[in-house]
Image (cartoon, one colour):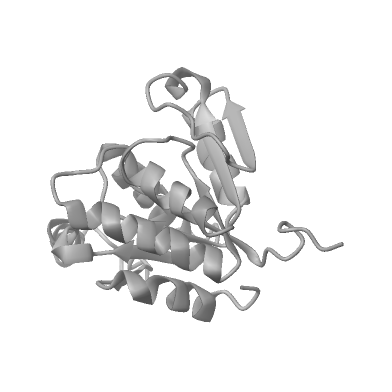
Length: 191
């Protein structure tokens, strides 16, 4: 008998806000991404919370029969309220362990709109790619131009001479939530 996990092609880590933000389109698009991942048989690895965009994407994966792996530090269990129903929920000691497990369990990384935590996670992956510690795709979902200031800052850092030649950050930008899964699949042959 084939189980859901047996048919899973791999997993994508989605970084996003534990808050919904002021624009309701972000919640709608987080749910759309979750549905697209489940329909493509790609698992979700995420921060384990039930609120904000994190909760939206995870619930949508579950609602569409997909696989969810949540990884949450013990000190955030009550603050972010863990998602019920995830097939895997790992409660870890600290943020460092959380990020390491998220990295190990994922073939690619997607950043939806979010706050400081999302930025920190995104920059860590971008730095690791820049330092050739991995070659997994990093995708910035610039939905409704949310990440424009960040993209301008990255360009500013480069033109100001703080990125050595040949070490430009490697990431891709999409502006349409429907392009995320096809892009991930094109960059990850195993998916």
